[in-house]
Structures are given as C-alpha cells and as structure tokens.
Image 1 (cartoon, rainbow, N blue to C red):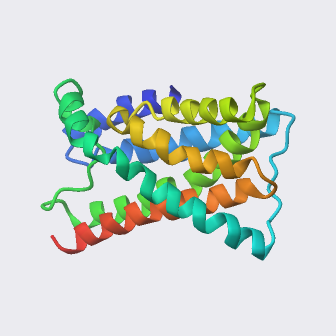
Image 2: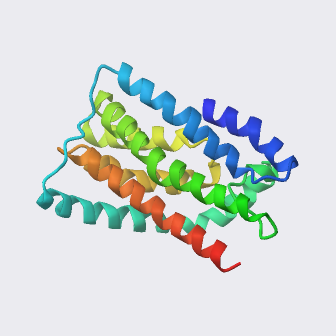
Length: 211
C-alpha cells in the first residue's frame, strides 16, 4: 500500500513535468518497498533459510524452476492485452509502467535503465524473495499446497500497481513458492526471480536500442 501511495503521488507529477512516470515506481521500490521489507525481515523473529544449496541441488532445482517460471505465465499472457485495455480505460495514462518515449532526452533513458535494473532485476526481487518466501511462507499455518497457493496469492495482491498482470504474476510465483519450501530453495527462488526479470529487462534494452 505504501508503495502504491508513493507511486500514485509521484507518477502524475513526473508525467506532467515531462519525466517518465515509471520513475515513481522505481522510487517506490527502492525507497519504500525494500526498506520496509528489510525492517520486517529484522523484526520477524524468523531468519529466512539463505543457505547456499549444493551445486547438484542448484542444477536439479534451478533449471526446472526457471523453465516453469518462464513458460507458465505464457499460458495466461494472451489475456493481458484484454486486461490492459480494460484497466487502461479506468486507470490514468501515467499508471502504465512504460519505458521512456522515443523523443525523451538521453539522460532520461540512462536513469530509467539504471533504475529499472536496480529496482526490478536485482534489489527488489532479492528482498521480495527473502521476505515472501523466506519469512511469510513458513509462517502460513496450512497444509503445503494451501500454503503455496496462499503465498502466491499474497504476492500477487502485493502487486497492486499491476492489476492487468495479476494472473500471470500468480502463475509465475507458484514455482518459486514450491521450490522455496525445500532446503536452500529461497536462494534458488531469488536467482530465478532475478533471472526472469532480467529477461524482461533485456527486452526493454532491445526495444530502446532499436528506436
């Protein structure tokens, strides 16, 4: 909620001033989401299992989880254009996390690229996995299957700023939550989360390079 408040408070101002509204979400992640979740991690009384898995465990768990996290959202991706259109009729134009427009100054692009990398590829996913999979998941008093679904649902609702992608976020999160229940699985979930977001980041860079 705090992140959405920061985004909703800064994005329209940035849009009116001619700056990329996505900077509002980058600021919200780096200066609200990450600090709040770090504080919650410290106060939880439960240390997430961040032990590094063995090389064999990494290969055995990382590859299937990565493939599942990359492919599973594709089953629902066909719904996203319709959902984007639906929410686009309700939400203001600055709500979309679009990259910088073609006519923007070069320094806008540089700040967006650097901020996107830090917020959505490196720092954000690592802290999110430590909190959601390392702390919240073990604290859910339910059978394993119910705990996995509940944790994935909580992570989906947490993405309030992306209503059009809730279905794909939920499906993407399931393999991360499943693997995180195993010893060393939280680290695997971190790697996969960063890796999948890096694919999106690479697509962003490719789009910017071909403008």
